[in-house]
Every structure is written in structure tokens, then in C-alpha cells.
Length: 346
Image 1: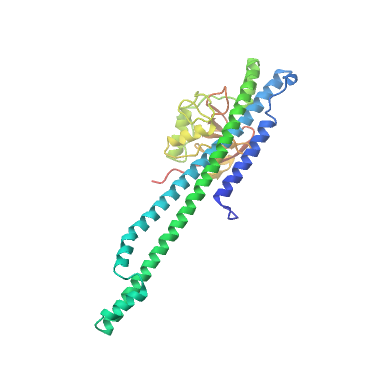
Image 2: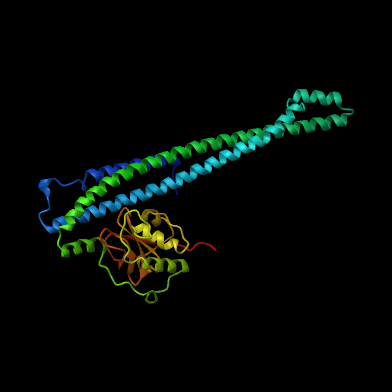
């Protein structure tokens, strides 16, 4: 998977740097507040501004989710490293009484111990036996101490690396969240423009973003899912139709796109990360003509939106503000592929 031996710490730092660069570009580029002289001249222009803002916020939201996944992974690595360090310390502590006993009995120095054995042995056979035993004890003691010391050093190094990686990920997440807060303020400005659109233009903007809302089919009308988990996910997602779109939420009262698919598969006993891009890296890739109910379908490049395929060319998804969870056609602009999530073993 990796072609070079890049450390997790370096990968995390690079990811945080890259994400920061993207955020700067977005925050200072196409989403910068328009000057007073650049007020939209037509409802079409105003609608385009709102649509552009929503698309860009989706990308930022996805970056935040990815950073959250990274933080969770790095924190788990730090906890594992700390456990290893504690185990190594406990092993060393358990050896200390044995080492003390060896020292008190005079077996810590090979020369001194050999001399004692020579003076106290009553026969050549007994002398050989004592010396052999002494050598075994000394070799074993040295090997154990060396092994524990090496393990303790390795655990300490792993702990330090994990701590630094987690700190780097947290710093990146804080930067992302700050940028997201700024972007949300700007989107609020665009939403004010959206509110001035006619009802017909609002509908057109929403439809361009989320696709036309379709009537939700009954479960019995859908083709069979390839697994019980997929079927359960479809039923759970369809039960959320009408729930409001809410950035960063995975329910139960509101959802963003990956929050909805995460919620749906959690109902089926399958844990998914709260990130459309991370979800795209799971399961088995399937082509458009092989889609089955329960498959995850992804959009845009880089991937920043996900829906749940329910069959008959339809999907259920949470797409944008002003549009609740709804059923739409899967054939929308930006279609980027699909994956099939396997049911948990057992």
C-alpha cells in the first residue's frame, strides 16, 4: 500500500499541511465575501453564489471529518503505546526481586561465583554442575534484562511518536474547525441571498445541488439486498427521510451525508467512519451497472459526498441545507463510483 517508509508522524504532518493549504485557498478564493459592488445582478447569479458556497462547504466539512478520523486513530495509537510501556515497566519490576536475590546469593559476578563454587565443591562433577548452573543463571539474567530494557526503550519511543502524531492531528483539526467556522459565517451570508430568491429559483438551486426529490418506495418494492446488513442499512436510511440536513451530524435528529450512511450501517452492526472519503476506501468496488441495495455511492473529485443506493436507480442521501434527507436518482453530476460493504463476520 505504501511504497516508501514514511512514518505515521510524517504522514500526519504532511496531511495537516496539505489540508491547511486547501483551506487557505478556499477561504481566500472563490468563497471570499463579495464586495458591495459585486452584489448579484440577477436571481440566477445569486443562485450560483449559493450553490458554489454549498459545494465548497461540503468539501471543508469532509476535510474536518477526515481530520477527526486521523485524531481518533492517533489517539488509539498513543493509548496502545502507553499500554506497551506499562507492560514493559511491569515486567522489569517483576524481575527486580529475582535480580536482588541473585545479587545477595553471590551469583551476580561470574568470577566470584566460580571461586565460591570451586571452594565449596566436593568433587569435579559437582564443580562442573555448579559452574554450568551459574553460567545459565547469569546468561538468563542478562538476556532478560536486555530484553526488558529493549522493550522499554521501544515502548517509550512508540509512546513519544504516537503522542507527537496525535498532537499534530489535533492541531490540524483545530485549524480546520476554525476555517469551517469562518466558512459557515460566509455561507450564512449566501443563505441570506438565497432567502431573497424566488421560490422557483430556490427550488432550482436545491435541485441542482441535491437532485429532484422522488417519492420514497416501500421496502417491498425494492430489489433484494445482497446481505442482511445491507438490507438493514437501507431500511434504517429510508426511515430517516424528512430528517433535516445538519453539518457534522450523524443523527438521530439530523444528518450530513456520511453521518447518514454511518447511522444506517450502525443499525446493521457495521461501524463506518464519519467521512465519505474514508468510507470510499472500504468494502469492494462495484461498477455502476452492478449496483445493489446497500451499496455506498460517491460523488465529486476529490470525494466529498456519499449516498446509499436502494435499488432501481435510486439512492437516499443527506445533501445540503434546506433539503431534508430524501430519495433521488443516483445519476447525478460528479458520480465517482461505489463500494459494497461486507457484513461483519459471525
